[in-house]
Image 1 (cartoon, rainbow over the protein chains, first blue to last red):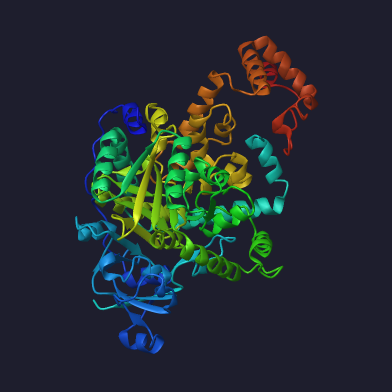
Image 2 (cartoon, rainbow over the protein chains, first blue to last red):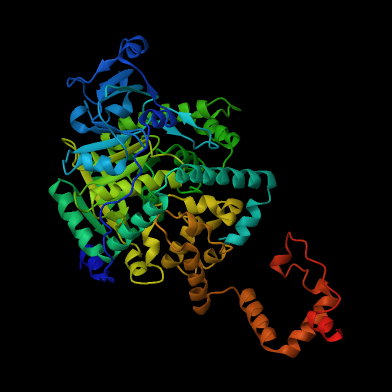
Length: 165
Length: 447
């Protein structure tokens, strides 16, 4: 008997327990900018961005995964931001490569739309299925050495968000 | 192998370090309190997530098959493994087909449970753990001591010394920023070179066939997106029914774990990228047995946030290694006896049954009750240490016989020293109270 049959055969149906359905009663009062500050991201205007990162590269389809390692500053477009936690939904289609937002040294994301919380975020995502997508909230970080927060573990060392909403 | 109590005795021998460990984990628990209390719907979210898990466990077979069908339609290869040995053999076959001798792995408690690294090493394949904390303990040939903070038992001086030895950082440098940068450079080389990447799985969605991996460092993604082959390993309890269900779990997970609003990266793997293979491992390894037992099935609701570790007065003062299991703390203590009763008979006793674990659990597992159930089951199975069996029988006999009870009481009041010996574990490191001259009964008779 295969492991699959063996495992499924051992699972006895339990007493029915209903799926509770969509979550009701989420608070709506969240501030995207405040959350971005908590997760260590910076918010800039386009003008400030020009001064800070004049040499940045916008997403360009001609770049492959590995040459991205040489890119200092990458600018991409996010689908929407989530106010409660500063997360930005990124879709594979808007990335030069899946590894792009991780392998660059500094990341800039444009955000045009903001939803209040994660329940609204998944409503926004709906059933659309891309090959890969992620919520990104702030720069890469770790506190694995004595709980000291260090920014820039393996991913981008900084995240700058430009809000166009 | 040392029992939890014996290993704890070694751990607390260093009082300063024990205090630091205790306070640091309590600080994490306080961060959890702060971010959860600002959400008025926190308790409703816990209840929602708990109900989704109850529903999933009641229909686990159906959801596993739905997930498998969707994942396969998305171009992902799905493997099933009844136990750790089967899991390790399948993973090895996939790596061998690729011809790799070295690979990168992000955090996966399941592969710790299966001892995958050791197995692959025996086949001549080196696993490079890429989570910073896991890399540190891997260099030191230790196991993670906490499922979210793997190196929480170490001080920065220890990490500095380890990195000096293995990465050639200057001796005496213990700056976390500097050491993290050294690890970043060291591991980036491995990410770029590895053709196989192994990751864990936080959630797998039956509705869509996608799986979600959460990290703060970005190491799971660096590995998976650069490798030709991505192997994702999960226990069968990681399934959830719908994509929208992720909202409640993601709101609870990071807040409960570290007091963060969400992990930095919450990646949804749906289809392999062009030219890439994705394999998903679905492992039982005792989970179906746990599911079939109404007393213990709720333990399968766990989302591995470790809030129960951080709040536990015993974990904080005994350290993760004292639990001699990949998953330590209160949740580990109710999971481990299911795998091996005899080897883990000490763990359900490594608790004060204060119930704090159950109070912080984001999916409302009745952890402290299950600890108590396990105590009863393990004693009934005759697995109690001899000393404990004799002690309990003596106590039961004494309490059932009023004459013996009175004689015993009067003896101990006069010769309290009889109890204050090394034979009495409660005497160790405690000042015993002074025994009163007369018993309540004697005092009452006089009046």
